[in-house]
Image 1 (cartoon, helix red, strand yellow):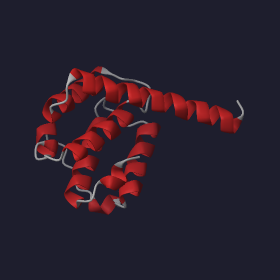
Image 2 (image 1 turned 180 degrees about the vertical axis):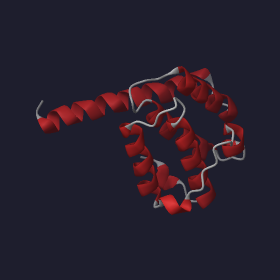
Image 3 (image 1 turned 90 degrees about the vertical axis):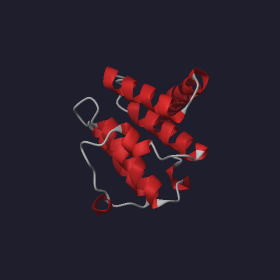
Image 4 (image 1 turned 90 degrees about the horizontal axis):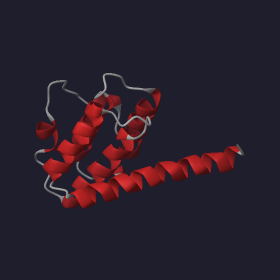
Length: 135
């Protein structure tokens, strides 16, 4: 949704690595999460061959160098969309969201604003599907 604003390949790769960590957080990457990961790559014009994922990198290793506030906002919004994609906001995902919030320096209010927006976006998407599919 907002990933096209990322210009640097370094930011794009960091985001994809973070997204893969989040998708695997509960030990299983479901179909919806796979679709999100593919759409992320498509939006940024990246291919699977450009991505070298490391299973042992920590969140701080991936996002610790981010300084640009707009990039942090994009990462956070998109990752929350991914976290809520499967309808299951589990303990592992909650921990990742809390850690991102802490590392990015977001207030509780900012976190709640992002989270509320993500939930409304999901509701609107479902409403749109119902309108289109006439359910």
